[in-house]
Length: 329
Image (tube, rainbow, N blue to C red):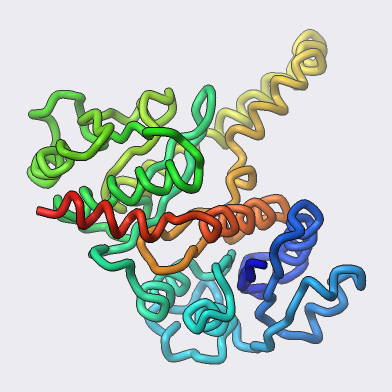
């Protein structure tokens, strides 16, 4: 039975939505144990008695807040994030999930759990909605400065994650650029293009719209570009939702139309709701690490846990190592 270490005190809203997400996950999946890291006296009242056999509490009182520096995470050995990472490092848990300080989680995972052999830099990946599914984009924030070899590694890691965890057969991979032609891009992306050409199912350069139209399954970029893309997409989705709501209130005809279209609007909301995707995997470390949004609700935490389980159940890390070796040079 898998054990998932969860920073139960991280996140903007405290332990309650985290515990609710854990309970929801336990109801649907009977093959894992939740190891909650946090203050026992605060967590116990939130746990229904019938789940006490499948939940273990690991006591830790220090919480790294969003305003704290990520560089301090290694010094704060009694923090919930540090203790949860150590459980994974020592083999007492199979994966780590947190809605807390993302920088602290990345630093601790990279330095304490360690990188997969052959990985220069782990990358944060995220799922972006398309008409018929999702596109995996990496990196979206872990590495703002990348060289061509880093981007090639991201392509390999993204392909393996898409195949082993997301279940996509022969995932198509593209390199994000300002045009589809091989001559487009900056010096780093042009060099990365050449390095990625030998990779299976590499389609070449793709543009920003390809992320959302489902042209490819994996899109590769550096963390600077990827993070801007992610925040822009979140902002656009939020603005479109507000525009729709404001216009629907303006007339009886619009309100009637909205009632008739409620199923369509519900599906649209699910497509752009980050909670449906759970969290962002940090790919390239030796154990699954899922970084959830700070404002995660119970649904987001449940889906983040499911991501961790899917990754822990796969042979992803060995396949990443094998492919990095295969396409080295």
